Image (cartoon, rainbow, N blue to C red; front, side, top):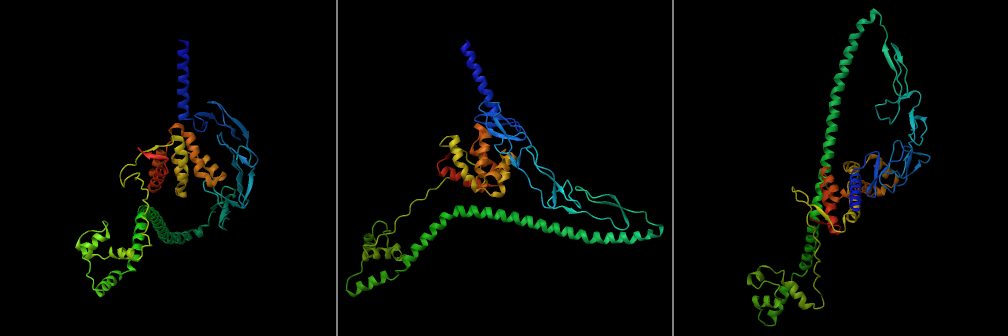
Length: 407
């Protein structure tokens, strides 16, 4: 009885661990070896991962020049930022916060705008008074002074000037908006056209190669157009009767059609036969090797076919990661965010090993997903991003290399 209760308790613990593995708490835990490890505190990184569920591994403080602003499960701290030339350092980078910069005196940058370049502070005009001085995060603020009564009518020319300015600026703005929309639509059309051309070239490459090969054979045959007339002339000069067409067809073998009409309407089979008789040492062209044809992953409008691993789920998935290098670089971050990879992990992969970015982030995703990770999820994410050609290419290559098969 006690032994049975122990087995039930072990099964319950295993189920709980599996549930935690399927969904570790984001920003508090990270997956490792089918269980969840606690994140290291801010200012540290994971030096050695935990060996038991719901425990913290060995954490080490960030090295100089790096930081970790929040609790993290990363194995490396982030690099500290460098201030621009037109900025000064307000706070040095420490292990828990990045470098803080602000514009130099006489310049400013609004907090709600990306500060690529600091702007020069404005100065009040002669008829204005300063309300507040320019700071690193705000421009100078001015207001009009009290005008004498004699200057009251001068407001009308100012109003007319403002009206003229608006009449000039508004059409220019509409023109700029129209040009920007045209550029955006043109770029989108180019991308769609490029994707369509890739798909067309992919499916027609084999047909083009075959047409090129056939054209080469026709040119070779066209270089011997007088083989039949010379043979006929020689036969007439020696007084020998010409061979009937039907006997000639039987002499050429079973590969030629045994009809009079085929021999009279087409001379293309005859030159090779004469050529073989006059040049017994020449060998016919070697037959083409049949090319491997992979079944399509999905039809034009039909749903995609599900892939089943051949080498085991984890091994087949790991081997197929290299196929995702063909994905358009412009869609990398969108793709990884769509499958649940955090921005911190993407930034670390870009700074650490840019050449292995795709592989490393897919490994991070596989560790996070655990038993749920499979290639069909990745292919569906590509379809959601309108990357159908990339999804079809990856699926076909995975089946062609023997990692997967169609269900």
